[in-house]
Length: 343
Image (cartoon, rainbow, N blue to C red; front, side, top):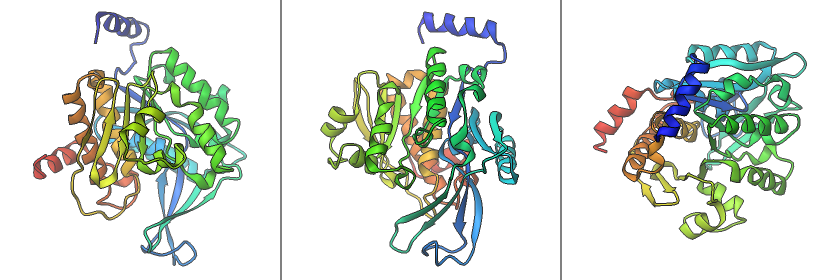
């Protein structure tokens, strides 16, 4: 960190002594996932469902906190039993929920999710509209967003107004305050009116991000069918001049990374998978927690590789348990896995 950055941080500290110098603020949706009590069935065949807190930005906030980091969540839920339960879950996991808002008219979003016998995930969403889509700019906790060392978001909040404009306003506030902008599109096609709309909106904020994490499937989708394993495709079509880091997650195989100076891949950590829900969010929380503590990893390849191996281990631990938030790992669990795997 240069002298200018240090003096800038000191100035901020004198203005607001409550500022956390490693705060990760996550913006977007939080909802209830209903997961079948038995695996390998369609939603129609499921005999019963178990409720689980979900929503990628909220999962990341819990993931950061579970690792010992500092995190907050900004979003909207219904003023109903599910919404109150979600706010309480964040609180229990030491996530600052002061940026949450409660809608008196719309319900908390629900999603029914199953992994069918053919390995495909099936989604059924109840959002007509749900509370998270109705967050307005006037409801944003601007002070909280301005404290973010990293401001993290997805693309689901871009689908409908007023949330879309609120999302753009929140990004602007964070950028002006000097936050690092982190973007995980987390494509959920069933929620979008069309493939074209999804592609257009996801790419509309692409060039504003400092850090982007995408999956192989998302590369294929965003490039219109190009080879997701090609460095040329990634660098020519998805890397942009303002980007500090682009990470491609490859599930159990680890990840690839691209910066202006270097690129490479880091292998996965082998475990027995039970449920892949939340693995990508755990990976992101592992990476953001490391970045929040040390931004120099963006320019130091050795440090970056260590942080990505750590993130891979976070994702690996999450697939050994059912659900996303319940499976988010602790720092001790990640270090133990890395030690035992000889990584």
